[in-house]
Amino acid sequence: MCYIFRHKINKFKLFDRKAKDGVLGYVNHSWNSKSLYQNIGNFFIGMGPVFSGTAALIFGMHLLLPDSFARVAGYLSLEPAQPDQYMLTKIFTLTADLFGSIFSAENLISLNFWIYFALAICISSHIALSWEDLKGAGRGLITIFTFILLVNLVALFLNADFSWLFADILALNVYLVAFSMISIIFSLIRLVLSAFAYYLGYRFS
Image (cartoon, rainbow, N blue to C red):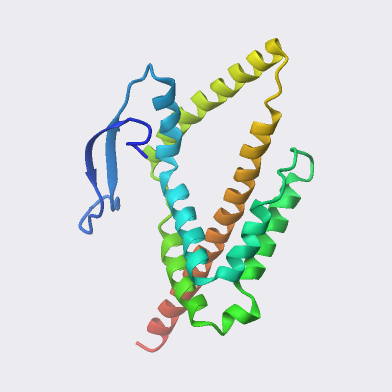
């Protein structure tokens, strides 16, 4: 993400098992505060673990659960809807359908499903944002809102219609939220399994 948004990487660490502060990896980067593009990039860099984790879940589904992926791809091919009072309902409906397609009876007897299940739990458990990630994303989010406001003012002045663009962005956000909720479900499954394993270890120790 840093390279995409032309940020300078000063220091990075991919994995540190001995970190005392619990931070397994990090990227220290700098940017030109006068650049709109680089300031917007702060949001995507800060939210990088969410985007990369979600992309990994989707790619894993494409490889291991092609039928479930085809069902999701069918949603992606639909015309994006305009925002309305039923948007939350649509998100929960998409999430429920996505969950049902993953945990279908056919998948439960498939080896590929259990491979994906294990990978999804590992990925979902590590989709976490540090305080620095949130601060960086917050800076970028403010810039994005300001940019959108300016675009709308220009569109209003020129009598131009950019609603199709914002509808596409909204649709992508719906799918991102749906997959994020699925990752939360996988994280909860891991939590339950960990608690059960701890109980068994404590019970029979």
